Image (cartoon, rainbow, N blue to C red; front, side, top):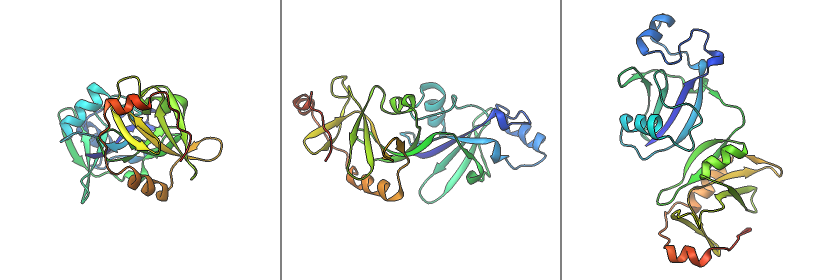
Length: 228
């Protein structure tokens, strides 16, 4: 289920609409339209959910490592992309209500970069992370290690993925990667957003999930891969 989540930024919320239900919001706005300009985009990704109730459970109770906002709450907007149509849903006091939402007017948080996430047993998907050490660590679930490529991209992995019980994810030349990892751009000094061409390249490169046994992982434990 491909979704995006938007949450009100208190610094731009001059009408105190954060955590208010839809009826109150419409009353204050004197309009059925949502003020998109007070919203930040805080999540982009493909989640293993079947409906909005499961999305609520994941982002309100369980949490998601790529989510940059507070737990899903009243006044938040969930965008659902079915592939053929995109709809927007207001998280109301009870359930969700479809609304009109001009998402291109929402704001991007500072220091956020576009990446490609590769998880075990799943196809890759685009997402966004906070471009900080903490943001990178959250994205892989632990201490990070860089795998440098020769096309101005970097694969960022959990350096303990092979020894912490993580599932095998993908094979690269001479090694295996375990646990979730992501690919980002490399500007020579820092991570940066991937280009469209880089996204497409690595979507194709890692398109097929792979079954990697624990024995194969153990055979590669202690091996450090530099580049291919």
